[in-house]
Image (cartoon, rainbow, N blue to C red; front, side):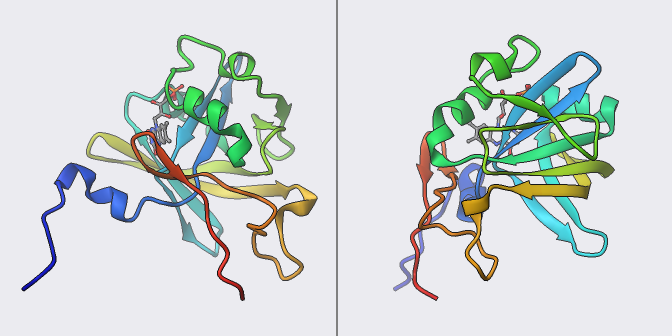
Length: 182
Ligand SMILES: Cc1cc2nc3c(=O)[nH]c(=O)nc-3n(C[C@H](O)[C@H](O)[C@H](O)COP(=O)(O)O)c2cc1C
């Protein structure tokens, strides 16, 4: 007898969707927003490309189309309230940096800002984008990346004994990674 039970199609992405949540920051002239994103992935090494799936109605997507660049910020679990706030309200209505007490610092390789409270950030120029259903996949060409000192172990992997990244399980459920030696 099989133990398998059907999973609702609308929840099927949750089986592969426990990557760390990011805060996508983007600015176009005097407009800016910070969009919480769980759906993202690396797509190429040479050139170094990473992608995010943004719902077509997101203000963040509108500003990426205008500015041609964006920044991916890596929040720790201590920023969970800001992550939920930025994932609940649209930048069309509120200035999320001031409402969520996030410090915007100018990026060094693109026109945009990174979030100082996050442990790392990746600056990207828009490389390509295409619509996929009700989302648009934006692909960014990495122009620079910075991380805080304590982020990595000496052999260059994220030190999850010191830094707890946020993993979105679905709805209001989040988790953190547990170390298994190595
Ligand atoms: C944990 C979490 C993960 C989210 N992941 C995504 C995502 O991958 N793609 C997306 O378009 N929206 C995602 N959202 C929703 C947006 O962050 C949310 O609609 C936000 O208010 C959009 O802001 P904006 O209109 O300023 O871009 C997520 C929200 C939360 C709370």
